[in-house]
Every structure is written in C-alpha cells, then in structure tokens.
Amino acid sequence: MVWVERIVTNTNMKKFRDPHQILQVWFSSSFPIGSYAYSHGLEALIDDKKIKNKDDVKEFLDALLFYGTLRNDYIFIKSVYKGEEINELILANASSKERQIEMKDMGNSFRKIMKDSWELSLPENTSFIYCLAKAGLHFDIKFDDLIKFYLQSFISNLINVCVKHIPMSQKDGQSLNVNFINNIQDFLTHAEKLTLKDVGTTFFIGDIYAIKHENLDSRIYLT
Image: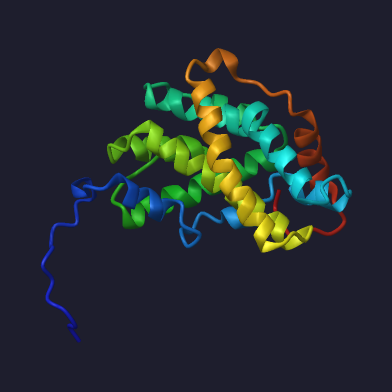
C-alpha cells in the first residue's frame, strides 16, 4: 500500500545538503556498527575496582582524550583527510589484539552499511576511523564537524558502559557528557598542530587493562 506519494526519486547520496544530519545518523546508537559491544578496557578496570565513581570515569576519559586513543584517532582521521593512506599504520598502533579486532570489526560493519545503504564502496579489513574519514570526504563533511561528532560519540558510549556496570547514576552520566562538550573543545583547540609524528600514548594503564581484558574469566564486552 502506498501511504504517501514519492516526491524525491533521486537516491544519489551526494545530493544530501546537511552534513550534520548525516553525522547524526552515523553516530546514532541505532547505526549498526556494534560500538555498544566494546568497553575499550573499561570492563577490566571496573572489574578490578580501579574505576568506582564519576570522578574515576572523568579521569579515565580525560586521559583517553588528551593522552591516549582519542588523541591518536584525531591525528589519523586528520591525516586521511589530507590524503594519507595510513590504514596499516592505524592498525599497527592498536595496543592489544582485541583493540585491533575492535578496529577491524567496526570498520567492516561500517563498510557494509555504506555499501548496502549509502552507495559507497570502501576497502575491506580497514579500520573504523579510516572508513569513517573516507566516508566523510566522500560526502563533503568538514573535518571539524566529523571529529566533534566522533569524539563525543566515543566518549558517550564509554560513559554508558560506566552507568550500567559501576553502576553510576544517569545524572552523573549526563553531567559527564555535558562536561566533555567543553573538554573536547579544549582538546581540539590544542590539537591543531598534531601530525603523524606525534602519534603515541602515555596512557599506559588504559593499554594494560585492554590487554588484561582478554583474560577476564567472564565478560560482557568484547574489549
């Protein structure tokens, strides 16, 4: 049954006009890349009583943003936007086997949806952030817009892990989300000069617990 008359018949995705609308779809919890299945080592930290409250979560996420994975992701995405072909470098910088699986599995899920629903083909077995950057370029999304959505989505996902499993109150979770709007802007202000030469991390406890997660007796998340 036809409920409404179709007015728009051209499905060419390049015709989209609002990049924020595209980004809202890509970073929606309903977008099937499976990000909810990953805790990025947080499950092991919570299990070992290293993270017990809102302040602990904030400290972990600040370190991840300013000194860890998200700092590197910023550099990698910006470099792809500049034309660098660095997928192998991105994968080589995974701190553990499970982190690399996380990169590839989310990348392959994103790639499949891009091909099936968004009419964009991306290389197989590439990292999520590589695929994301390539898609952003294809749809003419500004780097500044994409990186803000990416960082906020990543952090919000991990806050949700903590709300469920410390457990932490919804109020504390939302307070952290609000706090990191400012923290992300602060990070971006100081990150403009970062290049591939600056790739690295000093957030060693996060990497150690990403490895420790592989050997938990029981676990909910894949990383």
